[in-house]
Length: 497
Image (cartoon, rainbow, N blue to C red; front, side, top):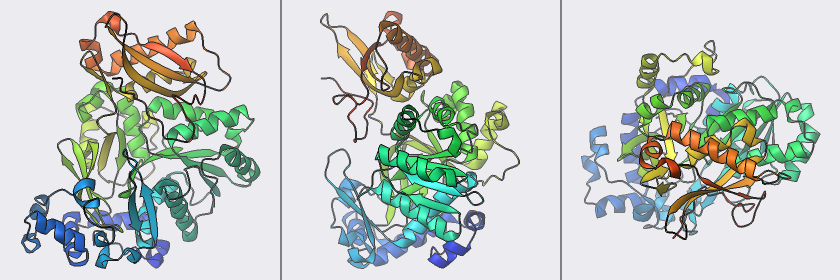
């Protein structure tokens, strides 16, 4: 199997996180990949059929070089092409105990079975995050704000947090889901009895909870709030903003983002080191462009190659890992890449970066795990005068302190053709509850967005005529049903016919 650590309840509960990571860093993930391949060929009927359909003799795969020549698996050519049971070990769905569902962009459900050993492996990612919060030595209330039900986020998060409590963390898990009033009720009743409270959820929803809580009189700074996010790229200005609103001054040790998918579980997680690096790169966009090759800042996490092994394929990510449905060279199609720990540290040294200036405590230990960066799907952009306009760039403009006081941070980016045939860049902005729209606010937002686009996006600066660079701002009230409906994942771009 891919993991040298035997993910049984006994070993997970008795082995410290640092020791597990030490064992894994000493192991050879490429040899482990070949072993996972052999076990999958032996146990999974669909994968044997998939190889036969592609003319691959599994007996000829003896090395990592052979493994790299295997065909990529995808949702269309593997997950949707073979029955669910055939993709499980011994062709039996009941070999797993739990099921999660994802709908994707088509609305057609895909089912992802998993077993308890899969959860223990992923719980290590949560353990890394909670140890950075010192939750192993501070009483902690974990409030799961992801939607509950068959969707992967809520139940998976709750289960992994329960496993940490079983391991001895002084941790209580509350599961209000995405019900704001229930979150407020739990926090105000229980948080005073704990040293810290961790909110876990989708970033825009967590911000909604924080803002609505402040309006309802929730005194977040009293509760030692930390935050765990998943599901969306956000800016470092956004992290600073929400941290300020909950009274969390320790930016590298007060929040963390998880990189996860329904198919593979949690693939990587932010660490204090990766957050400090990202904060440095946010302040030095030229260095970020040199490292990542784009004008937008991706999510940057560290990953455990013995749990999830990444490869790059034409600027997108391929992942392998053990799971209820084992993943072998699975093309998740997220735009991004990988950077070794040594290469990242050498790059920062060349730049003269001092990460202590960006919140990293040099006295805290650093695990030399590799990095993976993720931009998200490549089609979440709009084209304007031939320039790709990324939501991540617009976000920075709206998260300046004089604008975030009345704008929620949600927006919709689109290009619109005027009556005369000219294109304009239109940005529809959601106001905070009780905030009013006026021309002065629209001008401030437009000027701020234009300034940040010029700073961060060289295509914008060079392709678009100066007289067309200022976007047209339209305000909509909080939770506007057409542009900002409640209860669904927000889309930041809209393609106009």
